Length: 251
Ligand SMILES: Nc1ncnc2c1ncn2[C@@H]1O[C@H](COP(=O)(O)OP(=O)(O)O)[C@@H](O)[C@H]1O
Ligand SMILES: [Mg+2]
Figure 1 (cartoon, rainbow, N blue to C red):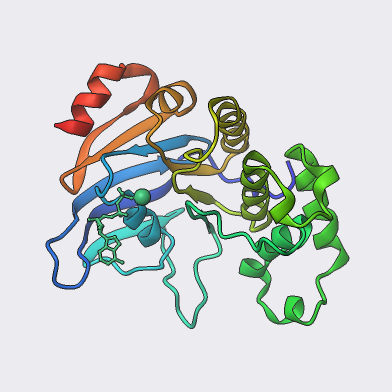
Figure 2: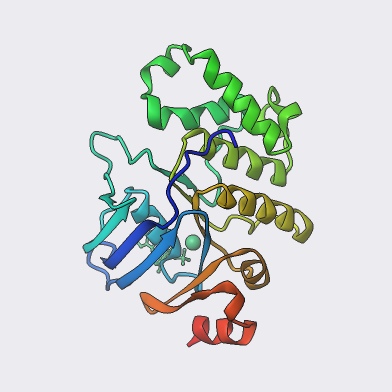
């Protein structure tokens, strides 16, 4: 699969005793500990305001935890030093963060900035191999024919595919995806979850938040419930029924 660096099976993301608060507010993460494995889809569930987005932003190195350890493939997460974030971690925010006026392929190429530095691309000197790789990834994700179109002309599902393509262009060990299918109809949501499943199957650790309990149970390998700032449930997805999930989420 283009865009996917092969990684050994095993733990890709290790989070230990993570604490976080916004300024002087009470801590919203209070000792979060879990692992996410390569080749698996790990879904984080929990009520709104429970800290899911904050957790993903910490894992990307965008915000600093109060304390706790985060390792990516057994080495510490690199944090935003001089504006350079850990290139092993790709982050797809809830609103996707695409440049709507730019073409699909240009958006996908920005994924390569994380590993190549910005200067060449700012000068319009993206190597031709990058363009070829971006086109191969788009083709694989079923939107090869959209490469030249501005993102703003695409449907919601197509935009999700562009965001996945951009993250793959980064050659990530981990993809963090926030509320990945929350704005899509159920049919498109299932298509995108299935695509995400394929991406995980190729060796990426995919860590996703969602409110869709059925989709989580159907597609994920592991479900983790955050409640009151800690992990209230951490289980193989197949071993938990909906009632148990709801109970873990609501308390
Ligand atoms: N930038 C911020 N400054 C202060 N408080 C914030 C900020 N972002 C989020 N919060 C608060 O932190 C809590 C957790 O938010 P969030 O991580 O977005 O939860 P979730 O994604 O689970 O809905 C909420 O109470 C939210 O209002
Ligand atoms: Mg959120």
